[in-house]
Structures are given as C-alpha cells and as structure tokens.
Image (cartoon, rainbow, N blue to C red; front, side):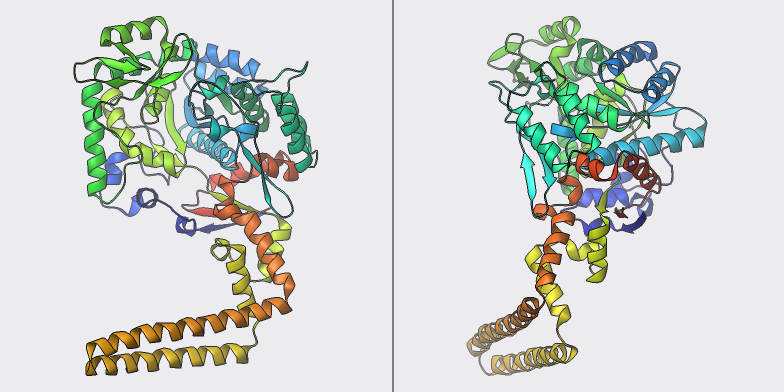
Length: 541
C-alpha cells in the first residue's frame, strides 16, 4: 500500500471557508478562522486542553447498555470503562445510512481512532474514539440508499422506506422488501464475509427487521471492533437528560442566540464566505416530537413570545416542563447538535467533513454562549482508494487523480490526443497558434479601421477558432477509434475514481471496499489518517 497527498482543491466544489480552515496555520493571528474554530487542525495544537468532566458514571452506564445491544467487542467496552474514570472523547458521527453508507463513514471513524491514539500518546491522558449516530434527523430519503459498484456502473440500492410523518429516522423499521435489497447487496459484494454482517445486522432472524439505528450501530461496531470505537445513539430519554442544560439554555435564551447566529451569518457573508445554515428571525435551534404522532416538528418563536410547532402553541414555561418530564421530545438542530453532544460527552475534539466544519463557524457562537468554550474540530481523512487494477491502468495511461476528476468522454478524448503521433501534434499546434496570432492581428487592424468591422472580425474569428478546436477533437477521436481500449480505460478509471461526477468517498459504500480487502483495511486507513495529509489522499491498495 502506498499513499499520495494532493491539495484539497483537487476535489470539486470545496468551499472557501473549508480551504481557509485547512490553511489556518498560514493565516494571520487575528484571522476570522482562528476566531471561529477552537484550534489549528494539524500539528496537534488541539491536544491537551483542559476539559470539564461530569456525569461520567451515568454516561458510562448508558454506553455499556448500548454496547451490549450493538454487540460491541471487548475493546469498545474497555474504552467505555476508561470514560467512566475520566477519559476524554474524540468524537465523530454520521446519519444512520443504509448498510453504513458511503466510504466517508469509515474514513470519519478511522480518523477519530487515529486522533484518539495521538492525543493519548501526547498527553498521557486516555482519549477514546466515539461515534455519535445521528438518529434524530428526519430526512428519510438521505438514509434510504447505498451505492455499490458493478463492472460497468454504479448501482444504487434502496429499501423503499415509508413513513406517514417526519419521524426520526433511527426508529424506522424497513418493510418486507429489505430482504431482497440485502440479498442483492450480498451478490454485488460477492458474498464476502461482510455480507454476513449485513444479514446479521439488518435481518436479525425470525423474519424480523431491525430499526435503522440498531442495524447501523451493530454494523459500525462490528467493522471497528478491533479499534474499540464506542458507538452511541443519544436519542433516548436518559441521554437527553444528560444534555438537558443545553436544551434549557436554548429555550430560555432563544432570542439572543438567534440574534448572535444571524450576526455571524452576516459576518460570514461580509468576509466572502457563506452561511452553511440559513438562520431567520423567529426560528429556533430546536425540534419537538409530537406526543401522539412522534412527528419531529421545528419549533418557531412568534413575536408575542409564544412557541409554535405542528399547529400548536407553547409557552416557554410549557417547553421547560416538557424538557423536565420528557427530555427526549426536544432535540437540537444541526447548529446546536455539536453543543448538545459536548454537554453529554467529554469531547476533546470533533472529527467532521467539509460541510460539518463549515457549520462550526456558525456553531461557535452557541459554544461560547452555552459552554463558554469552543471544541476543536478536526478534518476527517479525505481519500480515494485505488484498487491495483485501476492503479495499473492509470499508471499505464499516465493519468493522475486530477485528470480523472471529469467525465469518461472527456478523459477518453485526452487519452486519444496523447496517442497522436508527435508530427501530428506539432502540425495541429503550429496551425492553431498561427491562426490565433494572425486572427488577433487582423481583428486589431480591422477594429482600427471601423469599430463595427472589428466586432465582426471577432465573431468570425471565434468561429474559426471553434472549427480549429473541432479539428483537434476529430483527430483525437480518430486516435481513440484506433485505440478502442483507451475508451474502456477511461470509463473504468472514472467509474472508480469519480463515479457519477462525485468523489468516490461520497458515493461508493464503505462495505464495498470491506468486501474486497477485508477488515484489515480499517487498520490501514487508521494508519493513513495518522499521517495527517492536509488535503486529499490517494491510497493504492
């Protein structure tokens, strides 16, 4: 296995704020990103910060109970025992996506494991990796899919999850069609050992089907059994009781928190960034579960100080009463969730992806108001995994990762152009350059004679240049037809590296790689994450 580190800009659509966050070490001491984030993401600057620890025993009791439910191994149980005696947590998380979701889920968890090891070694204080399952979200479509590769395409499997209300996804039980989806996944995974894990986690037996949270928790616990990853679902009454102080603060100080978030959003825009979450007057950072339907409804504040959700009104006192009696009915939105999470856990750092890290620039105002500190946020490992066959083809055709971030047709054209004889390339280049030079001189001359004549020359010249480029493409296509294998090479490379016009890590399921390279792959990725490439890594398997 070998590793190459590329700048993060090799990936498309990387936000301005994420690029500046990664380059924080090069920024001025008073830069905005230094103010918005708890510490520089690299060189261990986040390690060793003092951290209050409370309710460690109650937290460990709840985690131990869930560890049994998720079938966690001895390493995870040992890490829970460390939390009981004052260990700190390096936390990451993800929605409970079908069959574990895309590769980035595994990359996140592997990074948390690596950072926990790093902090333990550097400080002598135990740090353990924790995976927070986002089970309270209600976007069912996002979690009801997983994509696996065939030899020629990306096949997306869906369980066809159906609900009548916007209920939290963690409690959703898939319908009878899940058996067919599991079996198709096993076929695509070529019945590797991980296929049995899918059956055990999603089809426990006796014709039953697990909830999305239970199945996902068991699968991630199984994948990271040797690394001691502590997997948790904080949707229960008991976990919400541990984080109730943050929920209470969000209720009692809603107006000032909302104002601070709106001000931060304006500051982001003024500095040339964007607000990841739009914050409007009268909104809140809370959702309420309807007592009867269990629908998750956003709470909004009206000008008279009342709260509204699902057609009903509540006073602040009524919401506090609900929090005290049934804390599980109140849940945080994306901006408040990290603060709620760090009220429950002794979080030393959070490992996130580009979008989550953009959230933190806004969440920082909530951290400062509620916890009086900002939890450091660290970037997850960003990686493309190259199988040996694909790596061989890329080497043969002299294709680097940035070249492959395109369509199969565009890459094929480029490969075809490369095979053209040197003499042909020289002639096309010479004629193309001469045409550009002469057209430029002619357009300038005619423009001097008459402005409208100059504009006509520009239009005619652009048509000539278009035809020149068309001739180049025709020559490349001719070479492609002579070398039909190049088109197949381009299709295979793009399918594996940039499927559907997206980075591999965001599309291809992590279990697809587990099936092909076994559970030893996880420890290899933990090692890669430990190297801390400040960009995007290509891992040759």
